[in-house]
Image (cartoon, rainbow, N blue to C red; front, side):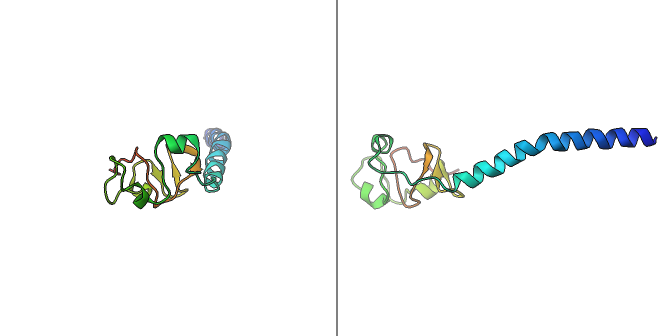
Length: 104
């Protein structure tokens, strides 16, 4: 019986050790994500999606409707102010682009 407990302990310890790099990778990725550079509205991808840092500036765009902002879009990631459409950058929470879709 003692050998069985020791075997279980060793197996669980090895599984725990094997999972450490995965956990560390997730933690460091989220830590780095908070340091994303702000998206430049003049960047090619930003211009292609008509991104503006202030949603009010998009009032004349045919796809824009009052109240649409990055921070209420399904692509927005509040913890990092990131956007799935611009994965290398953060966006202005009050911004807008033509790919805006309401959060569900």
